[in-house]
Length: 142
Image (cartoon, rainbow, N blue to C red; front, side):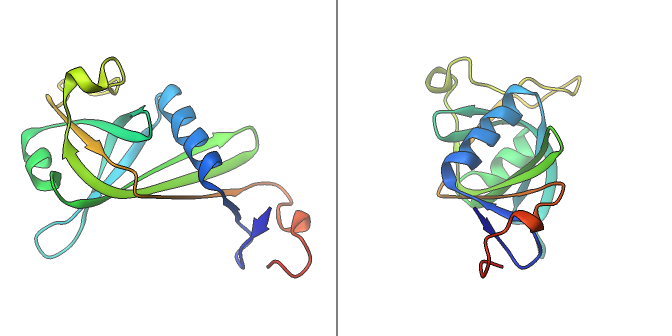
């Protein structure tokens, strides 16, 4: 285990993928960061996981704003007393309903978007914080 200078446990890619899938199974929503006119735009979205990709159901405007661009997706969750956060960065691509099958987000809004956006996971990172985490750090690893 590696603890950063702020007391957060740095998670490896396998644990990040597990938590990302757990969050999708629990129906958590994430946040999609896309390039915007002058500044990035971050919006809450429902998501699913298909293989190693993140799948979103979005409206036309967001679909066209993100497709073909490098985006960020972040989700936070709670696992017992431990809080975690996973960040994905990658290329957003137009999704094919046949390719993702049933791995589509379960919407929490009355009128969800009709377009599928797939984020290719190029980089995945994560952190976990919890009770007395700093006391579990290996000496010299802060």
